[in-house]
Structure formats: structure tokens, C-alpha cells
Length: 280
Image (cartoon, rainbow, N blue to C red; front, side, top):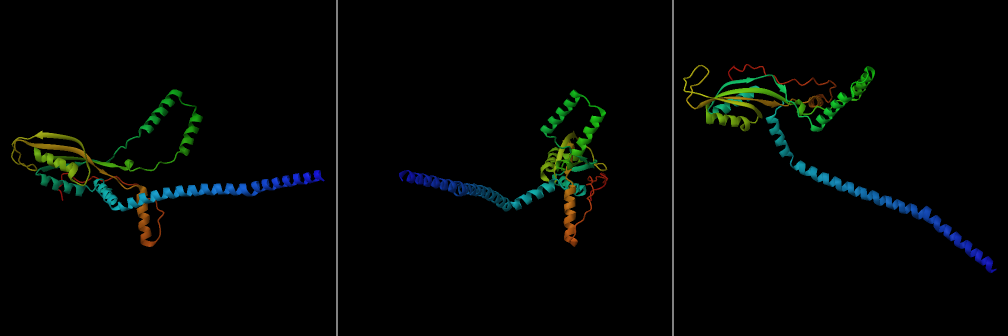
């Protein structure tokens, strides 16, 4: 009887342990794992919320300064406009010369040129290394070279056109005549006192003697100088993306439809005005 009782006790203990193990593996452990995953998700959500709140605070501050940014942008666009507008610039130069007390003898412009953009050092180093490697290893067979070239061409993707690659310089030469201090004042105004940005390239000065007035040239006194100023003004034509976006916006505002026409290439600013014609 005692042996049979011990057997039943042992079986009861084993059954209890089995129930406890089953409860742990099938009920408690999954719930604990789920709770741990939930706590991790909550932690990640709190971290994302903190990051979004920080970004929101930054955006609110930037929005509060939006008028300042717009004013800065307008100032920069005045310094480097989208068109050359040389007629207006000539009028501004004539007004500045009259205010400084000097006479502009000539204003000449040349064909606009693209201002070369600076090449990043890393890109230049990589190009130099590639050139050195090609020179060291030599050229492969015609077939492999052709295949490699075709593969490179096919895999290459066009890089977006940056503002620096669209920057245009209009060469400008100005000759003024007057007292030295007044000529220097005009040069200072040319560089800092007008809205349009002028990049000075070279400067020459010729001392004058006392001479009478002649056609197209005022009388000079000893100590006057003839100042030759060479440089260029900058123009940033709109990109094809900007042009397309503007056209699409105009079309949508006009009739509610968008145009699929591709924008034409941005032309370089024109500089065909006779430099010796009287200023308007």
C-alpha cells in the first residue's frame, strides 16, 4: 500500500512538473517575449518621436526666419541675375560715374563664357589614379576594350546639372577718366556699392597731363588718371528643371493641364549692343 501511494505521489509530482513546464513554454514565455518586443517597439517609437520633435522645432525656427531667407535670396539673385540685362547695368554704371565725378570713356563687353567650376580634390585624385593605372597596364585587346567601353557607357547615369556648371561670366572692360581719388571711389562703388556683382580681373592706371577738351574726352589736369578696369559680371541662367517646372506651373494655373513638351536648352546671355552707342 505504501509503495502504491509513493507511486501515485511520484506520478502527481511528474504531472505537476509537466503542467508547469507546459505553462511556462506555451503561456508564460511567449507572453514575456511579446512584452519584451512591445517594450522595444515603445522605445523605438519614443526615439522616433524625439527625433521628429527635434526636426519639427528646427523647421519651426526656419519658418520663423523664412522672410530673412527670402530677403537673402533676393539679394543674391540681384547680384547674380538669371539674365545679363546689360542695358540696365550700363545705366547704373553711368549713374555711379556721375556720382563719383568721373567720366566713362568706353564700356565694352565680350562673348559670355561659362565660368569653370572647381573640381573636387577627391575626383581629381581618382581621375589621376585611373590615368596612371591605364598607362601602367596598357590597353587591352580591341574586343575587350570595346566591350568595356560599351558597358561603361551603358551603366553611366547623367549627373544632375549643378548651379556652378551653369554660371556664366560676361567679360566687361571699362575705361574712366578723372581725379585719382574719384576714380578710386568709382572702383570701390563698382565692387561693393551696386547690387550687381562685379569680379575684378585686372586694373591699369595711366597718369594724365593737362590737356584741353577734345571730342569724346573731357579736359584733364595734372594728377588725373585714366583707369582701365577689366573683369566680368556673373549670370546664372535657369536650369532646364526650373524652366520645365515654371512652364508646368503656368500651364496648370492657366487651364489646369500640364505640358509634356521638353524645355529648350538655356541660351547664353547676349552681348551684341554697340559699346560706343550713347547710353539710353
